[in-house]
Amino acid sequence: MGAALLRHALQAEPEPLRSLVVESAGVATRGGEPASQNAITALKKVGIDLKGHSSRRLTQEMLDQALLVLCMTESHRDTIELSANPVPERLYLFREFVGDAVSREIPDPYGLHLSAYEACRDELVDAIPSIVAHLASLPPELLKKP
Image (cartoon, rainbow, N blue to C red; front, side, top):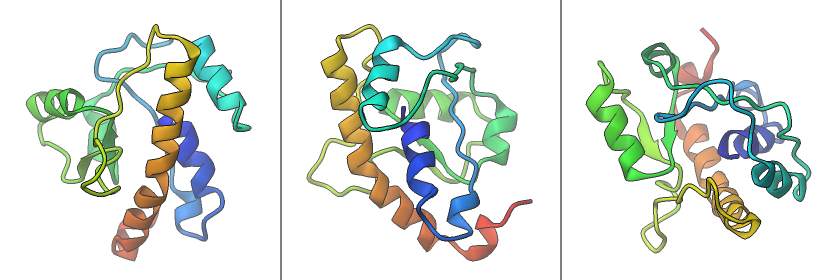
């Protein structure tokens, strides 16, 4: 859901932000799984179609090519820090840039009721302006396609 929401938000931004590629991968997922029906429903309510999404496992190649890696929880970040070589320079929590007054972790709603997916969606939406601002603050040469 985070990747789809961020991708949607970047489409409203000027270049080069608009052209950034946003991908999704998990540290503990099997590849090829469709999005859960609750994730599809939660995003459909805000006008985003997640029906074609398919899960994939995070690889070192993805980390090496990423401008920014965003994790939902500290355990996700810990997993990457322990397994990646090299560890990505820009490895953050999705809510890292929001500020000190909020929880930085976004719990995984997998297997829970629709209301948990909607709460997760809303936390992601709340964090996106701060991610966009962070991306906009990066040196322009980092934002150019290789």
